Each structure stands twice: as structure tokens, then as C-alpha cells.
Image (tube, rainbow, N blue to C red; front, side, top):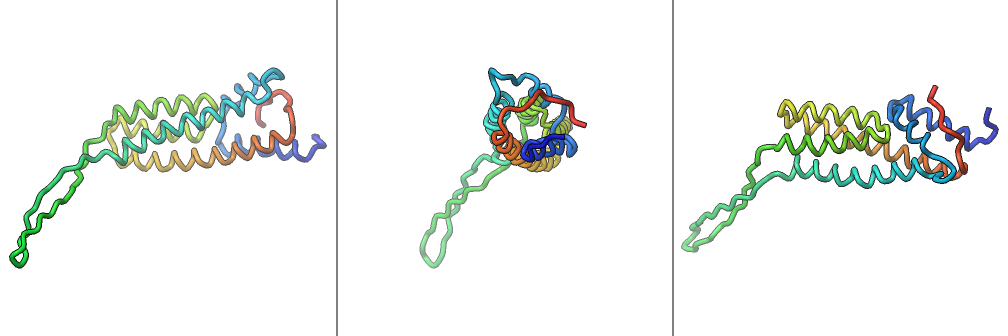
Amino acid sequence: MDRNPIRRQLAIMRQSLFDQGYLDEQFIELEQLQDDANPNFVEEVVTLYFRDSARLILNIHHALYVHFSPTLFLFLFIHTHKVMILLLFFRERKPFDFKKLDGFMHQFKGSSSSIGANKVKAESTLFREYCRSANAEGCMRAFQQLKKEYATLRKKLEAYFQLARQTGPLETATRPK
């Protein structure tokens, strides 16, 4: 049994990430690539994942929610001998580009898989299924759930790496129980 309480807490935290389904075997593969020459390898890869995936999330958000084209309408309004010109902007919805959405999510899913982000990867798969069936509402629901899972994973991994920095170098990676 580990006598260092911080290391024990770190081990419990790591195990819970697997038990709760946030991480899968790919995370262990990353840990096995970490060595004395690059002791922060996993944290660096995960940090890059969150930085790069933020761009993809923004692209997906933009494709889902900001796909309106403005149409200008001009109205003449006569009111008590005065002519008022009323300009109205209406927005009409362009059709969803499911192929583009699927492409963005394909990239996002690949990045998520590479770090072992299990729940995020599962939501990405669901989103892509909705794209293939041209289900806009399904895409929007799946995207909202994906963002929740992504934010939760980010918060949990940030806490994990913060605690890991306090413990110093870790031993070699082991499979979760």
C-alpha cells in the first residue's frame, strides 16, 4: 500500500476516471510512452488536445447555430402624413451542411480517441450518426451533451494533473482494476 497520501489520492482519482467511463485504454497507452526524458508527456498531449479541440468545437458550433443568411426587407410606412422607411432584417435558415459537420466531428472524434476520452468519443459517434441520417435536432442535442462531457473531462483531468505535479514523477503506467 502506498504510504504517501497524495499518491494514494492520485491513484484513486485516476482509477475513478476509468471506473466512471471518462477514460479508456488509449490513455494507458499514452502513459506508457511517458519516460524520464519526457516526464510530462501525457499532460502535454492532453493540453494540446484541449487547445486544438476548442477550435473544432467552435467550428461545429458555428456550423450548427450560426448558419443564417440575412435578407433585407424594406417597408414604407405612412403614418399621419409622414413617410417612414422601416428596414427589417430577417434571417432565413440555410440548410445544414451535414457533410461539413460530419467532417468536423470526424476530426474531433479522432483527437478524442487519441487521448482515451471515452465519453466524449461516444458522443462524437452519436453526433456522426445523426449527421448521416440528416437529423439536425439530434445533432444539436448530441452536441450539447458532448460539450458537457468535454467540459467535465477537462475539469477532471486538470485536477488530476494538478495533483500529479504535486506528487513528482510517477511510476510506470498500470492497467486500471
